Amino acid sequence: MKLTVKNLSLHTPAHFLSHENNPIKVVLMLILALSMSANTAVAGERESLEQLRSTTVNLVNLLVQEGVLSKEKAEALLKQAAADAEKAKELDTATALANQNAADLSADEKMVGKIVDEKVRVQYVPQIVKNEMKEEIKKEVMAKLNFKAGERLGLPDWIDRLQWEGDLRLRYQTTQFPDGNPNLNDFIAANNVVLNNTTEDRNRARVRARFGFNIKVNDWLNGGIRMTTGSINDPISANETLQGVSGKYELNLDRVFLKTNITPELSLVGGRFENPWFSTDLVWDPDLAFDGVAASYKPKFNDRWSGFATAGVFPIDEIESSEFNRAKDKWLYGAQTGIKWTSANKSSVKVGLALYEFDNVEGIANPAGQFGPNAPFNSTSANARTKGNSTFDINGGQFGSDPLFGYASKFRELNLTGKVDIAAFDPVHISLTGDYVRNIGFDRNEIIRRTGIVPGLVPDEEVNAYQVRLDVGMPTTEKLHDWQVFAAYKHLEADSVVDTFTDSDFYQRGTNVKGWILGGSYGIGKNTWLQARWFSADEISPRGGLDPLGIDVLLLDLNTKF
Image 1 (cartoon, rainbow, N blue to C red):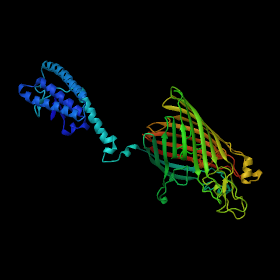
Image 2: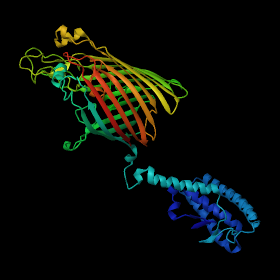
Image 3: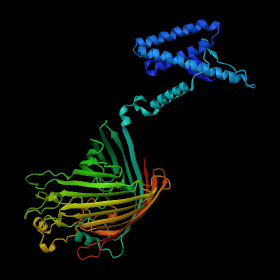
Image 4: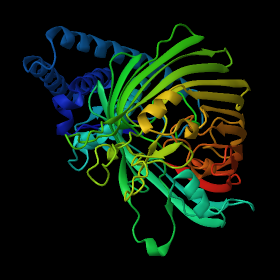
């Protein structure tokens, strides 16, 4: 059956009359057409109209019998159709009168309706019905094509629960060593570190790639998986140096976690996940992942004030202890609390206080006469350190033993972080960030007892670190012509933080350093921006009577995200 309204044709194939395709609307259209046609039908058409009327009534009764319509809804439907038909008749009459007054109307434009198929004449379809049909068709097409992957090509519905994310970065890096730097071998001997260069400038092209999925498991559980470039043995850098002889780049799991929101304010995450703390790169490198479990509570007191509290437990190094291996697992326990104030123009002040307790990361001296691969405290050595922290030889320089270095101090870091963000000139923001940390775990007497170091050779108490940074511009530069400039001063004394986890770009890793950072970013397209940074760093307290080690680094990055 085909219903034609002036220049509009409405097709109703048989499958459109099914329960899944809104039979109520079909019945409504049939009744509406029947009612309007009856008003203008000539005598020769009465028999066909009576057949259509009978068919429509039978269809309504059938829908009631099949349970698609209730009897009450069927009666209401018929009454509604009759009312709509009456309104259509009145509007059609007014239109006909207006057409009579137009002298230039063509014969086609004066036609009241068109007769098609079984000579059913329809003069007018209300605009509300047209709009409803249009929206229904639009929703159905969009659902089929875009929103329900399970209906496309038979793909499973879990695809709709995956959200793709990733980024690529191309980098040019130049590392410069000022004149007067100590000789490489002398620096290694004085600092007990593995280092490749202290005097020769180096230029490299580097790349970083990260991609993964955020996963909606169900209404209360989410997860994530992310892959990244970088060495599997390096916890704080995902860079790969471009060089043909290196063959394939390594690709490793960087995020594997499950997260649940117990309440809107309380969440729990476990696995390997992003940094859960309000912090800067003074303590934690931006690329560092955290293994373990963390809970966060973020209450909102009113429109201006909110709070946050985070606690977590993180294994650093799992050790299989035995009667021969007396070392213990290395852990990080952390807790932080803070408060945030937000003004009417979205300016804000945020302050957080944290305590990071590193358990069993300090070295323990092997007993006299016990050294080699089966010595009881070999696993207390610092196995991922960079440079700067005070260390000692676990084997105590025993005759015939190889040096094995562990941290001299314990680390219990008390960290105060604050940020003032002025948004009065939005979209330009002015933000000032301050970060201070003190290692309250440094204890000279405890170091002497545990390490056997002669009191006069115990390292000085250098346990404070701080950073001040000023940013001006947009908070991010991920859109065209967004910009930002920044400057920072950083000061990390030797045993202020664990050198394994602090920023890997400044001073090319490590502590016992101070210096400046200057830089800026500029958006060159959607999700694409350039960034330039200059790091100038110098050693604070040289060991072994050497001159201070200086390292300057220039980083030029092309960043994209998707």
